[in-house]
Length: 283
Ligand code: 3HC
Image (tube, rainbow, N blue to C red; front, side):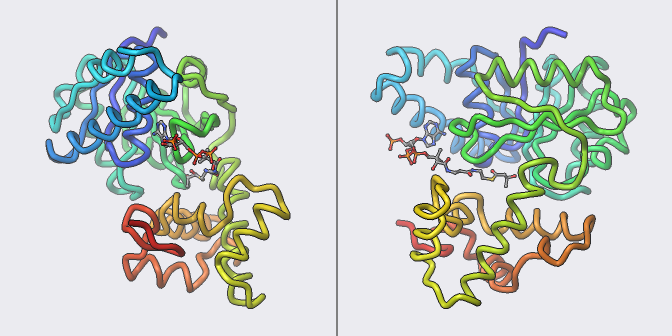
C-alpha cells in the first residue's frame, strides 16, 4: 500500500519528533492534539529543530520551511479522514489508547493503517476493541525520535502481513533502521533496557555512588552514549516508571518493577528534563 498522507495523534516529545520526521521525509502530515495551544507548541519546536539543522548544514536552506508547511494541526479526528497511516503517540494508558483507536476507526478509511508508538503496552490489547485489528501495528520509535535510528515494527496477533511490511517500508522512508519483532512485553529494546536502568538506579542506593559517578561509570566503563541517570531524565521518569510497571505486570520478574526511588521521584513530579528536575536540574 502507498502511504501519501500521515497523521500523528499526540504531539508530546515523541509525537512531535515523529511528525518532524514525516514532514522532513516529504509526507503531508496532520498533527492532532487536545488543544490548539499544544499543537502550536509542538509546531514551534519542530520549526526550531529544523531551522537548527539548516544552520548546521544538515538540511538545505528553505527545506525547513517547506517541511513545516507540510504540517497541519487539528484537534478534530474528522480531519484525519483521508490519511493512509495514523501513528498514535498518546498517553501510555491501555484504556486511553483503546478508546482512541475506536474513535480513529470511526473516521479513517477501512484500509488506513493504525500504528501505535506504545513503549510497553500490548499492541494486541490496544487493537482488541477495533473492528479491524488486522490493520493495527506497532511502530515504536526511540527518544529523541529524530536522532535515534531504530524503529521496532511490532507484529500484533492479528496484524496483516501487508500492513506490517508497509509500516516497515514507511520507517525506512523516514531514514530509520527498522526491525521486525513480535508483540511480547517490552518488545526488544525495552525488555532489556528497562530492567537494566532499574538495576542502575538500585546500584545508586547499594554502592554509595553519586549520580554523576554512576553516569561516568556507564559512559566510560561500558561505552554508553549517555549515563543511565541522564538517559532516565531524557526518557522521563513517569514514562520509565509506567513502562516498568507494565513489564512487571506481564512478566512478574522483580527486576522489572520500578525501584522505590524512581517511583517516589515520579510521584513528586521530578520527571526529568521535561519538568526541569529529575536526577539533575535543568534550566
Ligand atoms: N531534531 C533535530 N535535532 C535535534 C532534535 C530534534 N528533534 N533534538 C535534539 N536535536 C539536536 C540538538 O539540538 C543538538 O544539536 P545542537 O547542540 O547542535 O543544537 C543535537 O541534536 C544533539 O546534540 P548532542 O551533542 O547532544 O548529540 P549527541 O551526539 O550527544 O547524541 C543522542 C545525542 C543521540 C541523544 C545520544 O546521546 C544518544 O544516543 N543517547 C542515548 C539515547 C537513548 O538511548 N534513547 C533511547 C531511550 S529508550 C526509549 O526511548 C524507549 C522508550 O519506549 C522509553
